[in-house]
Length: 629
Image (cartoon, rainbow, N blue to C red; front, side, top):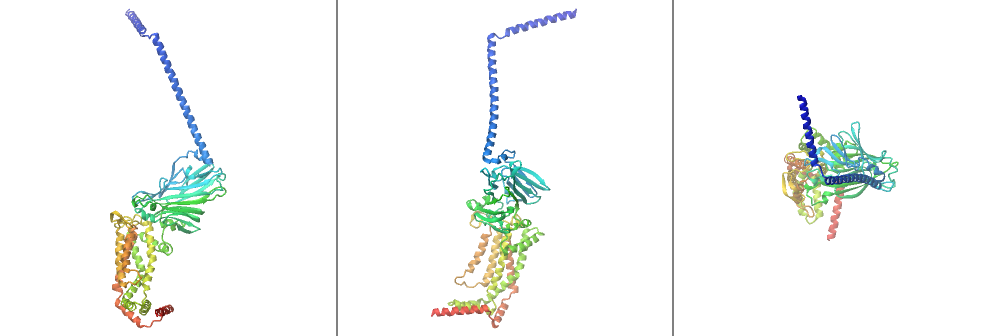
């Protein structure tokens, strides 16, 4: 009964709630005007939505068509500009991307654009300011380009075209193939192969199936350019040893020198070196170029207003070589060398590359090659200090030359003993130059003295002096090796910085050249004072030379390698010491004077040359007397 009551009440409640909801809906229902207005508003919204959708779809279609048109236009433009090489421009590699090959000593980056090396880094070396040594950096200071004509009358440059890279291995060697493609199986290829621990890179230029692409009636030219990046503390000193060298005609070698040269030409060229003092870039070819033209521009000299410390590049080199087709294709086996200008390394390749190291010509080069380089290598093999090596080397050289110097000092002693008698002859015959000469020669003959015997030993020392002058600036082993106050024996030492620049001297004071100049002055004072006679008319003032030589040494060597100045300083110290020993211990002036007087008493047999000279002088004297009458 209770359940029926509950059910009835529930039903009545739900009915009442439903009536209330219907009443509320009725009272809140929109009027017809509101319905019409809302309908119109919705129609406008739907219309706008359809319009926006249509606009978006239209824009998408338009943009898609524009992209296709642009790609198509670029392809057509590439075909019109590049002809068959438009294929290479359509490949994924047609972008500025690089591929790296490297070993323990060398890292090379090759750009798809141009297929050439845009970075060459020597891993084991630093510049004077601790920056890595780059021979090529960011592709800005070097380029390699082949200029050629095509059968459809186009002239193209490989530096503007894109190569497709492919890395592989040949044993332990890294191989990078850069192909400039006309089709999948027709291409121009640069092939690089780098061996472990080597500065020499195998390089080849070859083509495949290009017989109907290259215009064989037009010249194909290989152009190589490089600007020498500064690596040394003294840019002017580095620039002095930066030059272009080449080998031609099967073993001859030559260089352009340090000034500017344009279009210097040679035939049968087998290698070209762009040398930057201690580092070198060399292009070698197994098939000699039938001809090649070279140019060298001295950028540093052209920008004289730039201070030494602000120099970035020194010289700009260029070489241009025609390439020959064989059966319509190119096939050149080559090599690149990017590495130190080290005699031992270059000589080890057995390609005559040791000529890149400036050891001097003729006998000077032989002395360095067969004496000083082996001696320096032997001493440095067990002595770690290169300054000590230089000192020991100097001592050994002076000992080797001591017999020659002994003869020179004996001759000087004889001339000193004879000086009073020579002065008497000069005074007695001061108005008769011919007679004075005759009597002087007669005195020399009787005394057994020869003024030339003192000059000959000095002349014999000149080859050694000049050889060492070439050796020390070229010794790669001295680079960045310190000794005492010098932090780099291959560059100048500094004990004081000047707030100004002295012409021909520089903006610093180097101590080794200063010490060497003082030693030279002391030596010249001792030797010149011993033999100096009164100045003869027309003859140079010996006192002036005695003061000028040390001054020239001071100015000339202030910016040179401190190792060279160290050698001259030690050499002159040893020479002064030897001279003092000979003068005070070995040579006795009284004994020499007694021997000369004894020689005067002995009859002297004149040789044919002396007789002939005497006759000539007597005839000249008679002719002079006849003219005076």
